Image (spheres, rainbow, N blue to C red):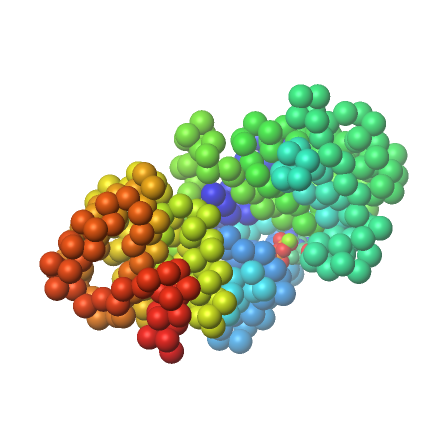
Length: 393
Ligand code: ADP
Ligand code: MG
């Protein structure tokens, strides 16, 4: 689960991380009362989206910049009006962009230098890793590609935590002066505590900045939380913004389905994550494009299959459906009954290819036959994939 920059900063502030003062608003009526609380002088106006690259983004009406530094409150008000309700396209939103439904006004900081700092989980070493760089404010992927020597990484033993020698590696690596180093050490330590205690999978500060008087601040903040640990953090779940999430994924989560929306047009309904991955691969292999990843799991009920099928059918991009079931624990007849039930409720105008194999397959096929449903049977996985790609083309 992700949260907005303003929520991330409020959370980090509780852990003692220095951030510029700010006020977030969710309606145009709040712009002026919010700005009234700022002293005269520059104000930064920031579009709130669960996507980065806002500063360099462009709105669909041509207005440039989802983050703007206004020299006065009047100018800040103008920027907020241009951004609010407008659709911002950044490198991370995809070409359709996202509608801005919250604005964050913050005090402008004087920036001496911008740095990059992130804490994430490294899957290879199964440890938290702190990644830092003197090249802040730019895409870290670009730094990693072109000047990897400018990135410092420390891998943290979770049983020990962030050790002093590792902190020194970071501080020397970022070439801070003594006062900056003292302030940065405090910030990094607090950031690590926040990462650890909230079960975050990533905390990214880009940029982390130093000011002319050697203060160190987080100017931007992005936090992702481990969904599997959310049950421990009701206060974090309360920060969820469903406007920022794919409604199909929200619906799928309600039914405990593993569903991820993708850009293609062939929907797939599969049991088992491995089979679901290879189903997407084989669709690609024969020249098609999967519209989603969907694993209904080994012990899916008929209700879950109905819900899954309905979610697939509500995706306007979908031009065909491939059901690929290898029944081990999964009973093929449960899948068949779920499909028949869902189609009865919402209809089916798209080509459907079904490949059933394994546990109770004869009963499953009989259920589908008896329903009179118009579908194409797939023999092997390859045969089923070829058929759906051809039908959609
Ligand atoms: P994004 O990463 O989505 O583009 P940021 O919050 O990082 O958004 O803002 C982009 C740039 O705007 C920053 O790299 C920084 O240079 C500038 N900026 C952001 N917030 C402030 C602030 N409070 N004071 C001064 N400059 C800021
Ligand atoms: Mg940023």
